[in-house]
Structure formats: C-alpha cells, structure tokens
Length: 425
Image (tube, rainbow, N blue to C red; front, side, top):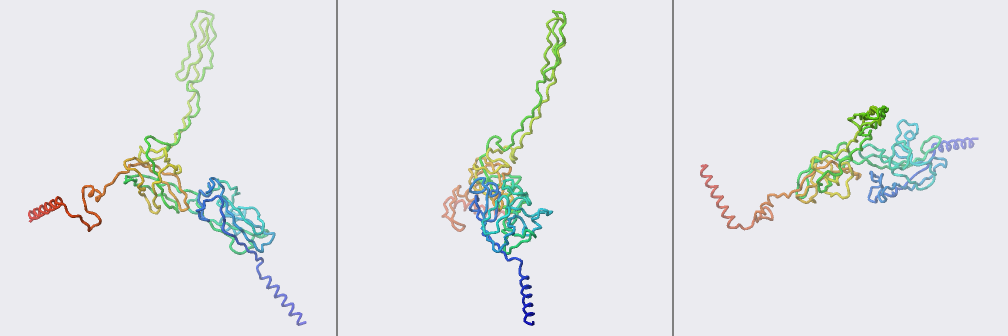
C-alpha cells in the first residue's frame, strides 16, 4: 500500500510538472527579404517615394519583397498572417473593432509550414486598417513629413483566443519617407566667378533634410512655361444678341405705303424687319436682347521669380528637376540659408537658378521659384598684382630681385616719408 501511495504521488508530481510547461513550443524564424524591381544600391530596410511609386529597375513596377519563413512545432489549426504596423503581435492593435488601429493586414491565411512569403512595398505603408490593393494611391496615404517607422509581423495565432503561439523574433523593422520635401522660399542669386551665389529661406517642418540641389539654365528672353495656362473662356450667349422673335405687323391695304421701321437694338443685331408689300406695314419686331458673354477662365499662376525679367522655358517652379538642366552643385542642408554653385557656368551670360531639396532617403522635391544673375570674372589682389607686372610669388618669404624702376620708386617713397616726418617735428 505504501508503495502504491508513493507511485500515485510521483504520478501527480509528473502531471503538475507537465502542466507547468508552456502550452506551446512553436518557433518561427525568417531570412532578410529579397527585393524585386528595386534599385540595387538601396538599403534593404529604408524606402523612399521612388521605391514606392516607380520602382527601380523597371519603371512603374510594383516593388515586392520575399522572405523565407521557417515554422517549427506550430499547431496545424493556427492562423498564419503577415501584418504591417506597430504592436501587431498584440491582438488589440489588429482587431477590426479597435478604436485606433495601428496595423494593416497584408496577406490572407497562410499555410503553417516552411515557405516563402511575398509582400508588396505599397501595402506595407498603406493606411492602418486599409484593404490593401498594391496601388500607387497607397504611396500617398502617408501625409506626415519626415522618416516613419513600422515593422512587418509574422503572426501565428490560436484562432480561438487570437493569442500568439510562437516564440522568437517575429517582427522585421523598416523605415520609409514617401513624401518629398518642399523647396526653399525667397531664392535670390548674386554673381560669382563662373558661378551664382544663392540665398534662400530654409525649409521648415522637415526632420530629415540632407542637402539643397542647384539647377541652372541659360535665361530665356521671354516668359517660359513657368506660368499656368490661361483658363478657357466660359460659354455664354451670343455676343451679337438673340434673333428677334417678333414678326412684323400685318400689311395694310395701301400698296404704296412705306415699309415698317426696323427695330433698334444697341446690344444685339436688330430683329428681322417686318415684311410689307402694301399699305403702311406693321412695325418691325424689336431686336432680341444680346446674350451674356461667358466669363473667362482664370489665368494660371506664373512661377515666382525675384527678378521680373527672369525667365526659363526649362526650369519650371513646382515641377520636377528636368533632365536637360545644368546640375550646378549642392550644399548640405544643416543650417544652410544659401550657398554658391559649382564654377561650371560661363561668365557674362545670364543664368536662371532654381533649388530642390533632398532628404535622407534620397527623395528630391520640386523646384523652387527662380532667380537670375550673370557670373562675372572676379580679380583678387594677387591676380591684380600679377596682371600689373608684379613678380613676387611662391609664398610669403619669396622675393624676386628688384628691378631698377622698382628700386627707384622705393627710394622716392622713403625720401617722401622722411620729409613728412621732419615737417611733423
């Protein structure tokens, strides 16, 4: 009997020990993603607007990433899904009834086996709770400036409780900025030697600016395409007035009478005179009232320039930097309120300059308003000295032998100084 009691006690302890183990021992792991239709030189987990809208190696392609996922010990009835957002391992953040959702479902239910999982970049940054469709419109869902952070979550859950049933790292973090920065305002330009020297009001409200790009072009002599197109005139009534609807009076019996008097109309074409073949004809119908002219459409707004005579048919304010513009340098954004272009311009020719801003994920925004000036040759003291025949050079302590004329001039200056000193005495 004692042995039997010991056996029962050991069995109970074993059962208690087993019940204290985790309810599951499933694990999940995944490889870094392989991206398709994306430029090869991009960071694997940082995305910009070009990645989202146009792809890299194929223009306009939908960029996708493929992960190799390994699942060990997951229940066969578990739900396996991929979500994007923050805190998606917590069901409260992915629940359809949540007041403020922070997650977006990227896939349907996946098989709970080792496999490859492909996701769309556009879906990864779609608005929280949206039904994803891989469309370019998802790239515009983010309206917040600056670098944003999210994670992909490989969620394996119990369908009855919605609780996660795996251990290990199930999230892959990434950052993105799909909103290009605005251009600077108040751009002006001064003359440099083969360059233009700019000043501007820096961009406000951006947290990850990298640099300001300068784009130059030879100035045009007449307004270019920077202005908007004039609006189409509205359609109105006929400017010459409507046709009179009154018919002439009934003819009299007098065959020699005069014709009816034509109606007078200062705003339209008069009405049709009454027909009268005999007698005193009836009075002609009055002319119809002129139709009201349509209102002209509003003219498009021209691109602003600090110089009213500053035009470019190539650099258009508010447009993307064109391929035909001169890439005339850049300046780091931190603390910048201006900067000089590279010395790639020709002196004594009038140039237009516009500026676009680049952020830390290499989004380049649209062009600023225009500024114009003419690069000029600048002669420094040393250049002026050499142009005047000066021979010294090679450093502060290097001198060429003095010529007689230079020596005579030096003696004259010395005698003059002595005379001045004596007069002061």
